[in-house]
Length: 207
Image 1 (cartoon, rainbow, N blue to C red):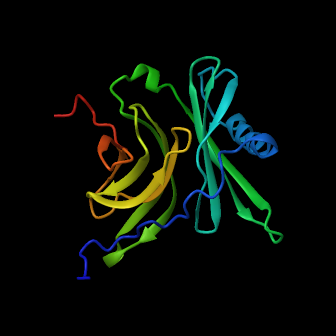
Image 2: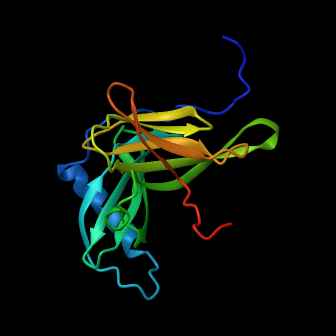
């Protein structure tokens, strides 16, 4: 194979190892996630009470496993974030951490969205000549039917992928590298591209 001029980390995270959380494990994760929700500084906003939590496929990177989540509140906001953990000495989950935030921008109010996305930078990757990439955790739900696989693509180069579990996916991918930014794409089981969304929202008022 010939050398490449796109020297960038690819497929850095382990694929999902478990089913979506349920039972006692889901209760454990819920406790950590709600503790992070309680720490949100919402200012004057009334977030209301969290509803049912939707869990997303787990992904492990740099010694930690990340399980993203979303939940609607009784006042119409969407909570989003993740619970992460490391493997303890006995192999059981340990060293839990969680992050949470909220948004009023939901898929219900944006029928033009093709994929409902959330993201959080979880680390850095150093590349050539001092350049660095944001290692980004991305989780989402397709707004179109018949999807089977989601990819993260940097300048049309696939840098991660995840099969859909219960219409949900999680990616870990380098972003903002050498002037390039991630697109998330949805494919059918036959490899047909069904949808594409950027992580970045363009300003309609921008010239």
